[in-house]
Length: 120
Image (tube, rainbow, N blue to C red; front, side, top):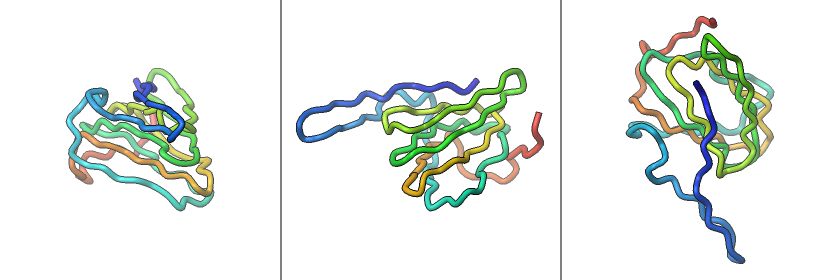
């Protein structure tokens, strides 16, 4: 089931420093980021194996999630919030602000055969 984790952030007069260390529940094999999105929906799939951790490091976006039992909508609008997406989580990303940058850590290398496009 998809869920939000808080990333440790240190704040002082100089600004903010957010740390990603020992909180992602898998070994990271791939990193990608999505930006410059128009009013399109992204995603529209789930996986056989891949787990993901999504952070909107700038701007905001919405992620719809359905794990076959429960539907959720997550607003990612703070760079210290990380959405963990499990393989069974069919998801779409939308409502990207013009300045949005969505960074995603993945547990597996890209494999087209890992994708399941059919919704529950």
